Length: 80
Image 1 (cartoon, rainbow, N blue to C red):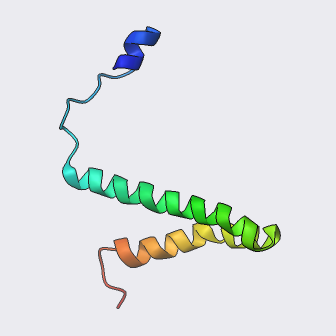
Image 2 (cartoon, one colour):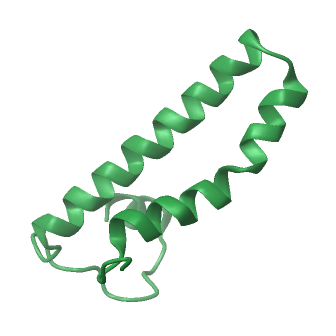
């Protein structure tokens, strides 16, 4: 809200009231941010350890890995 006042901007939608976001949603957001930060940091560190072509090849497989992990951990039904 301070940025809106300083820059003279108007909100597209009204801002949610403080405390209106459930705790489990904030926890899930924190985990998502932590995993993304770890992946970003490890990718940058790996550029110094191995060839850039290998890092890019492994990084290209990240979406497939993300889908597989989401299916394993977030599915509501068992695989049987």
